[in-house]
Image 1 (tube, helix red, strand yellow):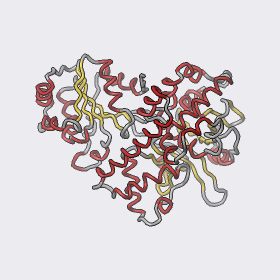
Image 2 (image 1 turned 90 degrees about the vertical axis):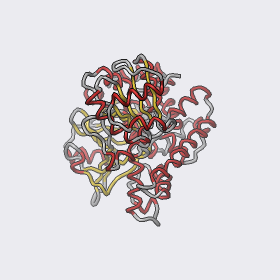
Image 3 (image 1 turned 180 degrees about the horizontal axis):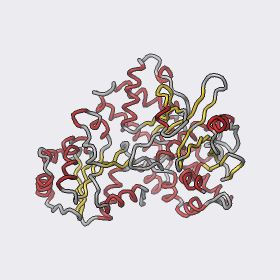
Image 4 (image 1 turned 30 degrees about the vertical axis):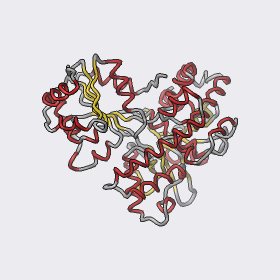
Length: 439
């Protein structure tokens, strides 16, 4: 099975760029960072040297100096391979275990710019946030990796269907039979999610019981990491927030909803840490009256998006055999659909910067809320999520009226269409939003 990621295109562009800098791949544990880089290295380089600081801590001594030539000479002796700029990829995995290697990256840019160097690490953010190990600004670039998007999922399990999505237009939407087929694939994705280990195992065995076991194992792996965060947040607060977050999808967060017995300050610290580890993403409230959204953000008002829709299902303890029931996934599953949409928006955002999610809410007289607001081609669009084919759009219309926006977006299991000032986009076609809005 080939787990092809769209980030490979960005990696290749980085490879051939003349003014490239050392690269850091950022993202949560188990989203496939190491696999991606190693597959990329085998495909495009004459040789690749992989140093995993977690498995081979002895390599840390090579970074007692910040001189790249000395570092490479010592590594070459140990691995008995020559490091040749332009031909060798040096991959520093679990780089957070060797902060000195992070510091050394700036000198690779200055003194060995022709050498391709990539670093990655699951707990990287915890090191970068420590004042003593501040990132060498301007000397390193980043790419952000998330779980498999639905489009990446289709390229594995239903590759022939991708062409229909990429070519669909308002005049020629996806044929109805393909539409129904894509909804079935979408239902599978809601259960399986986008974690690479889950998809790889299911592709080989199609064992639903095994899928649940792997998802539970991934959850346990995240929880075991909380001990590494001890100097930042209390592990018990972290675990509580981690366990509650998937159950609060779609709701505006109040700290007493998470744990009425804990102090808001400590819960905020725990949520910030989970966000740094890319396990959760805040969906921040914004007035959306202009670009950028951050200028009108209300930091006290937010919702949460968890790392993966399949793990959300696992937290809810829903037996995956329910996947076989035709209508179960989409009926009364608004929160799950919101989770999926947030996950998709993150996956298709520019990979070179940390993506953010926003929603719009108006309190007081005439309460209104739009699930997401997005920017495409320099314009602001409200995006409402519906788990079924019908649903009122009062809040979306209120947003359009107050902001004098051209039109809004509804995403659901309905076919692609445009009715008055609402563009209806199937959930399975969120990868095409920018293209559809530009038509």
